[in-house]
Length: 143
Image (spheres, rainbow, N blue to C red):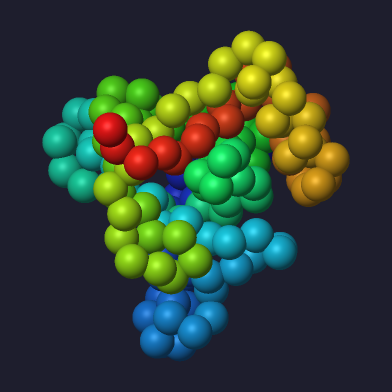
């Protein structure tokens, strides 16, 4: 599995690509829109930004997956949104939106993950690589 340094390097390269292309390249990956997600660090209290794909929508709301490439550990951004579900997201280069992350559970999560795996085989592979149940998160407007 990828190490933390590899994930940080991939994020830095992705953000650099967006910067040098003036936002013209990098807002889509493997047919999926890219989400620039900002959470609040659960320990530091500081904003933390990561680049993710959003492979699905629920009622028009973007879905993100805490797969970490099938690693046995949850990604840090997921731990942050567990502690504070209020996030900021730019979706496919659009304006920043103030959203609330809702972690799906039970049948909703199972159904969404099955749909994701059918549409994007990499997600099915990620679940095969780990014993943890990979979280599926819906980003919804804040109440």
